[in-house]
Amino acid sequence: MNYFILLSLFATVFAGNAPRLKFVVHEPSRFHFNKPENYISMYHQEGSDTVYVGGQAMVYVLTFANRGVRDVQIPAASDQTAIDTCKAKAAPLELECDNFITVIQKVNDTMIICGTNAGSPRCWMLVNETVLTDVQGNGQIASASDISPPYPSQKSISFPADGSLYSAMSSVAGHPGSIRRTFGSQKLLKTENIWLLNPQFAGAAVIPSTMKYKEEIYFFFSELNKTARVDEEPYRARIGRICTVDEGGIKALLENSWTTFMKARMMCGAGKTHQQYNNLKQAVVLTAQDKRAGVLYGLFSNAWGRTVICAYSIEDIDVAFSTSKLKGYSSAFIGSRPGMCVRKNSTTGGHNDIKNLGVIRYHPEIEDVIQPVGVAPLDLPMDDDQITHTVADIVMAVNDEHYSVLYIGTEQGKVLKVLHTSGGVFIISQYSLFHNEGPILKMAIDSQKGHMYVGTAMEVQRLPLADCNRYGDTCRDCILSRDPYCGWDRARRRCLAIPPGYNITTGTLIQNLDQSNSSVCGEAAALKQRRTSPREVLVVSNTSIFLPCPVRSFHATYRWEKDNCVKNYPCLFSGDFCVLGPAVRTPLKDGVFRCMATEDGFKVEVISFRLVNDGRLLAASLASTLGPSLLLAMATLWLH
Ligand SMILES: *[C@@H]1O[C@H](CO)[C@@H](O)[C@H](O)[C@H]1NC(C)=O
Ligand SMILES: *[C@@H]1O[C@H](CO)[C@@H](O)[C@H](O)[C@H]1NC(C)=O
Ligand SMILES: *[C@@H]1O[C@H](CO)[C@@H](O)[C@H](O)[C@H]1NC(C)=O
Ligand SMILES: *[C@@H]1O[C@H](CO)[C@@H](O)[C@H](O)[C@H]1NC(C)=O
Ligand SMILES: *[C@@H]1O[C@H](CO)[C@@H](O)[C@H](O)[C@H]1NC(C)=O
Ligand SMILES: *[C@@H]1O[C@H](CO)[C@@H](O)[C@H](O)[C@H]1NC(C)=O
Ligand SMILES: *[C@@H]1O[C@H](CO)[C@@H](O)[C@H](O)[C@H]1NC(C)=O
Image 1 (cartoon, protein in one colour):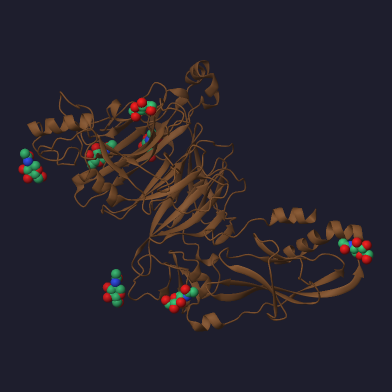
Image 2 (cartoon, rainbow, N blue to C red):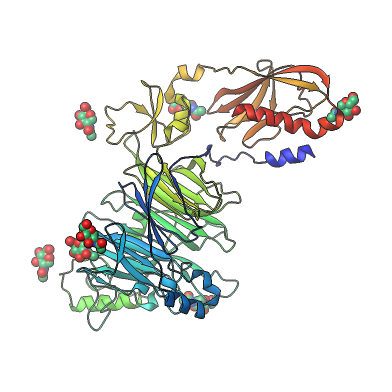
């Protein structure tokens, strides 16, 4: 009976790809919604302390400080007639008959806010940080229903680039789905309906270039074949791309449509197996400033709702789009390749261009299929949790190299911090952030200020990206964390955040990110054995004793030793504690028991207990029901 309870408490097993550290965070920087916000949109501008959150008939302007959050709430109700009409025609969606804010974006200095407005979308401008007014100005704006979906459960993406707003609308009943330029002084353009098959959008990103006119926007989405047979995969993951200089075609052909749209299929799955993930849910791109290099992370799910992340090289995608054959087109290209970004003034209206427009109109898909780096999804330890959102950051390490860090939000409200290198993934840590363990809905990264914003239906929280003082006060602790934001300062003997503008030639911080190896700390640090002073435990004879040892690093091996290493015993159960308990050949009698953790070839003492026999006898019935859990609970209390 007791065994059973304890086993379920400690049943978690160590895995090589488990998070190395687990933190429970109680930061003061959090904002609680007054009512649950099941659909949120989030806007944050790098370098500011403010995050804009769109909810149900409300825009929250949250300004974070080290202690606490200042909030301004701007009501954005839909008019009652819209609500009544919505309820009359869409009974099953009644809960969605309100103004859910789906878009908050800044184009130049104009803050554009759009909402579902109970089934008939509307857009506003946010003026003076507090007032919503109709959109005006010199730019033209598309119909609000091309920017915001009518209901919050339908996904749209809006994205500012080069002074214009771009919007991708997923397909819903009555709307085929589209990618459009929706606001700005450039011509408002759209996709042709035949280019997209029931698209469900997952993200967008600007792919910069040293030559401004070559700047592109990538859109990430899944296409759904509604007539696929039951034994066929209905989803296909896609990348679509357009050039920001695109000004549309000619009167006879693609007049108000993109002339540079192309799309490709993306695969995510273990090479030879049938484990394919085709439903792209979300995507994020890391690129260095004005470089066409970087990495795309796509969050995919399969038919059973299992989620994985695949990583792609932006260079691979770039090469595919500029060299691949076009599907269904085998003739040679006349003049320049169709779909490439060209300066607006070059030979517009020439014969070659008309030919190229025709090619793009009927053959926008390339033949090459985009494969993930390392062919398979990233090896992440999801257990029975699923990924709901992901963001990424690029970090300059002390060796003058860039490292990618992924932040993965889950259904159970956890955030994993993951180092991604060519050698694979290393799970630096897992954060448990929230009072209420709801799914993580949105995240935003501010590399400049070093913050991450995380939102659930209940709250919005801010966390530091460089969280170095959590790693401990020894060089080994700091180095083994493999956190690119942190380095060991030999002089000050502390684990410190790499400061902005750190000079790699004169700086003295040390790191070792490519492998878990703390030899940079030197021999002295390794040899310094630290002893803990044993805590005394009175043993009432004929009760079972359980000794808990808190697990810090989930990559270490924990064992118990007695009589200075003459005998050693494995954990009876492990999880957040390595527990020593009664088992065959474990004489839990008088003596000192030490819990030792071994990682990276070094053994460290974590905690020790001195068992002292009390000689008394406990009533049998009481002992067998209370004994173990009581002792364990007492010991656990001491640890806090
Ligand atoms: C915004 O603030 C300016 C200056 O305080 C004021 O003149 C203007 O009327 C305000 N605009 C709105 C829409 O409230
Ligand atoms: C943003 O600024 C650019 C350059 O000044 C301008 O061409 C463009 O029209 C502006 N966009 C909007 C939406 O006002
Ligand atoms: C959808 O699936 C059906 C059945 O396999 C197939 O005949 C059809 O060509 C597919 N449609 C597209 C656009 O691929
Ligand atoms: C096109 O632009 C280039 C550089 O911006 C310029 O040198 C060229 O004269 C322009 N051509 C036309 C036809 O305007
Ligand atoms: C780093 O320090 C060295 C020596 O003081 C100096 O020559 C160099 O310019 C500095 N580099 C940067 C990027 O500031
Ligand atoms: C750590 O790195 C050092 C130097 O590169 C090497 O000699 C040592 O074997 C490595 N230790 C482990 C445990 O891999
Ligand atoms: C404790 O000892 C008593 C008497 O020796 C025995 O009856 C009882 O079963 C023992 N209880 C446990 C939990 O071992």
